[in-house]
Length: 421
Image 1 (cartoon, one colour):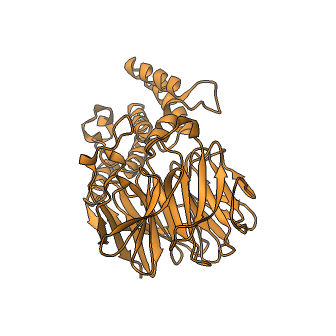
Image 2: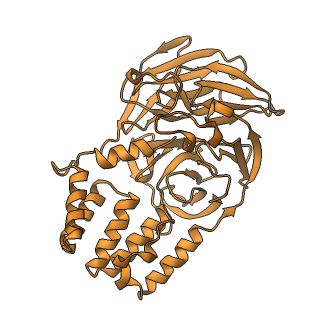
Image 3: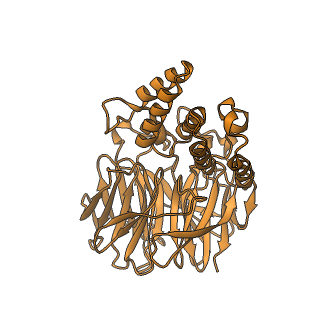
């Protein structure tokens, strides 16, 4: 899902829980201090902003410069390292603020890291190319018979595409279609839909509304639905072995679990809810491990977290210094590894991260695709039969400021895959 408007909202409007000042006020103070060459005050302002709003590339870049201007060379290099893992396109080498760290050994390592991160790596392959037109798919499901179900943001529907490329509408939806998953216990499709301004006939009064739908993927019959009337963008879901559904809300940081043992029901209910407003910003992908003891959850800003489904304990998943778990949209699990689609970093990348025996620490990662020409904006995927499939180029970039889709900027949808074993 496109995160730009959420990111801007958090950065420019959010009010600090630590102070009555807004982030923008701190930023203005810092800029004034920089122009007055009061670099100590400038550093204090940047540190405060970084604490309130972590992992923002612009903030981290300015903070790295503030450390350099105050003679704190090691901290400056550390922050530049963090920046490059988020956005390797920053031209820090031309910035005079960093003149006094250029002879440091770590500076040459930064240049090498930037070159590595900007190097194109493709270890996957094209699976299907689909001319989707105005559909704007965000998610898909590969079916056993070779058909593909595409969920439409723009046209609010799910379509079926057969191996020959023929398309038929499976079901119309009330809102834009986001995450979709098949319940392996019964073969039924679950789809998360939410009111987004990019969908046709968007009504601002529907902002914050979501509808989760259970659908027969053969007939398109809607079996039941779970309604959420305010404060939600349910962007993804996971289904456990008891056919309970876990839901992530990216508008307000909450995680829910609903029972789905009703039939012919459309209504609002939620059986279990986690309030993650303390320390979380923008929830995205979620996935259960094999025995379903743990649920892994991606926050677009702060990285991957793990929830113990028995005790409800929430812990952060740690990674080596060279791995930054930021900007993750889709998140998937395969044989004690996590597969992450990073569309909040530059260049885009799709990664597989291998966990230790505790499941809380990442040992190392491997690149599936980094900066490949097909990565328009990779979004969501699917693990199936030992392969990982993902949608490589959801056309968010093709919208103008009025949320109108410019078809001249829309390319055929590319679904790519990699064999995981």
